Length: 335
Image (cartoon, rainbow, N blue to C red; front, side, top):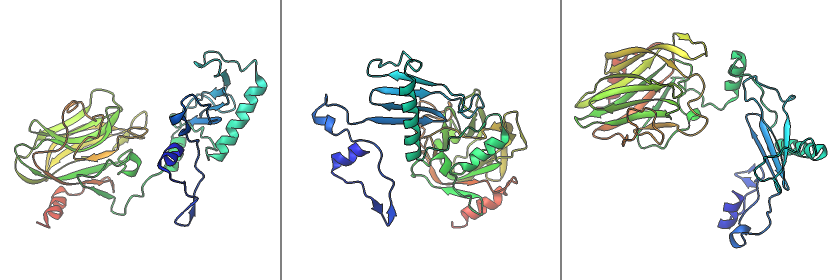
């Protein structure tokens, strides 16, 4: 970011709309554009991810690995390693035992950087083995407040919606209804959320409307299909009812596929409790943004075509399926 600002001739503002800004971290690399062999202007770089920490400072690097949110270790027992990167670029030789003062200097510097950049306090919750820790951890994450109706309406042509900003279908019962105008040539993704490493999608392919739930990329996918309409406006969608929790707190229950007010398929599935992914691969309407959720359409142009996708409604209000016929009547009322 400092490099981009300098290259564009833009100064980072101290105040925006009356709000004082956090100082911009980092050092511009613009000087290297004209002098590639110039000495680095960067003297310190700290790292932290899920409790694993590291810091580089003037040719030395200290790192410690931490069992991330799994109860495998705690911060008091983590061992720090030390590498002289100016002489050992591949970090093959840990010299911590030979340089205890240098190691302490870097550890102290890490805490200074962590405090300055709002990294502290560190999180050592056992979210994999302790349900209470998991509940607290999820509660600390950013989540869009659920509207009173419990419904979220999305339209085609919008950009990908980040997972934690989209309707949260994790650990709950949910319904997804799409208003679609079909033709004999209708095909493609109605919605997709996630990737091959986990997610769910509703799509039309080969004359079938299919809902696929990809549980953390573990085959086989749960898929439920029925013949798709070939003309006119219809409501297609699914209802998942969480009836119980599995050994790993995954939601388990029946998944029902509807075309208008007709139940056209049903089977039991299990659903992810936490995240589909750590970042990226958000909710897409009318396409799948990158890594496909379902192998059923992987390697093809999955964009919705051959018809008209009006909107997709996610409903996480309660555990009772809201009458599909009433939903359809409301959706069609404007016509």
